[in-house]
Amino acid sequence: MKRKLEFVPWRYVADWKCTQCGDCCRYYSVVLHFHEWLMIVKNFGAEHTASGLNKLFIRRKDDGSCPFLQSGPYASFCSLQKMKPRACQIWPFKVLMRPQYGLANDAFFQLGENRLFVYADPMCRGLRYGAPTYEFVNSTLREFVEIAAGLRSYQLKTTSSVQYSLFRQF
Image (cartoon, rainbow, N blue to C red; front, side, top):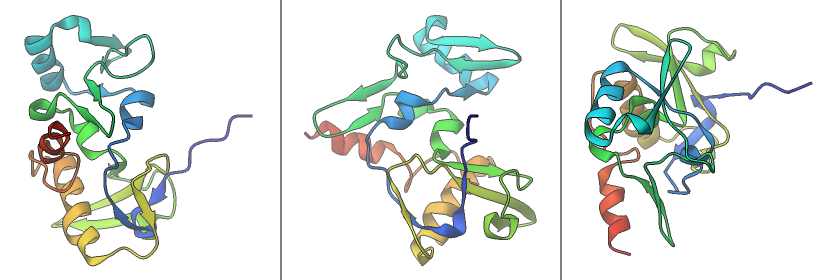
């Protein structure tokens, strides 16, 4: 019997920093909102997308990876920086309206009037477990939650163009 992936409540995460390993782009399918799909089709063509039952996706390459993953000797990055899908922007976190993975008290996050539940995907190499640091809660995690809630579209702490520009220096 297959074991269901266990997501971790954010209160078990001390910090997160993208390691630029590219695993998220190699092993996960990206569900697109319609406007994200439209931007990709407009800029790169429909051949980079696929559709499923009521969902739009980025089409995977033959090796299973995202066609927008760029890898170098020291790091990987997304070539969609200016139009990166929200699912990619907030990975490895899931921001939900209900506690779908249990431990609701540890996943609870208050954003204004919104009661949200935030979980981390334990497959991410950038997670450091323990008591959440002040910086993580008030800057990094807040950024993820604001992006997920549609209150912010740019990234500073998460996988951003800042990392892309650092990558280009190698």
